[in-house]
Amino acid sequence: MTSLSPGSADALLFDLGRVVLDIDFSKAIACWAGHAGCQPESILARYVRDEAYRLHEVGKISDADYFASLRASLGIGISDAQFLEGWNAIFAGEMPEIAELLPRAAKQVPLYAFSNTNRPHVDYFSKEYAGLLGHFRELYLSSSIGLRKPDADAFDHVVAAIGVPAERIVFFDDLEENIEGARARGLTAVHVTSPRDVGNALKALGI
Image 1 (cartoon, rainbow, N blue to C red):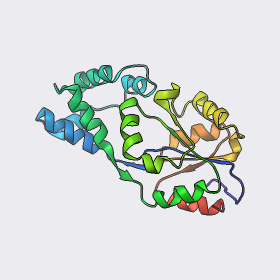
Image 2: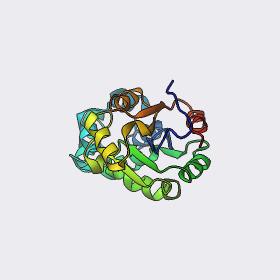
Image 3: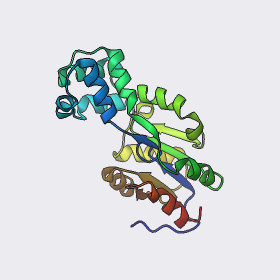
Image 4: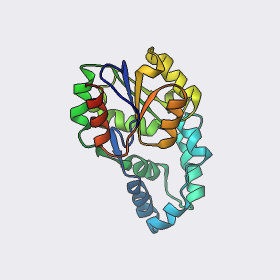
């Protein structure tokens, strides 16, 4: 477990999915299956986060190109609008307790977010969760900065932009590979496996 102590953080950096915003990818699969007239299981069996997915997350290919790649890999002939509907259906609300924790933390230390995401999701969550996301001074989004976790240059970019030493930044993420990537670049990282982990870490930091 990362050792956290009061006064040891000059900035807090949060992943969005499953840390701040709840994500339920089965909603996308169900939506696409409904439009395609097939069973969700047949789509789920074929869905992979492939090279096209990664390129979409760093803004290197368009939404239309990504949906075309899905059309081919999933074997379903649905429209871009139908893909987009399912793509944005994954947002399942705020994570428990986060709406109380963020404003309290923001009074004591600056908050930032760092998320691997894509333009349609950014457009959607920026409007849908504007109040909650307003607690962050800056959102570092892979589709805008052209870099994604867990790559070293992505963490280095964000640390430089925040402007405090890496070891004074506490980073929250739900994926082990991102936690390891952050620690390799000197950040203090908290692996979020349940909603309680964020609250417990803030308590340890005296926030």
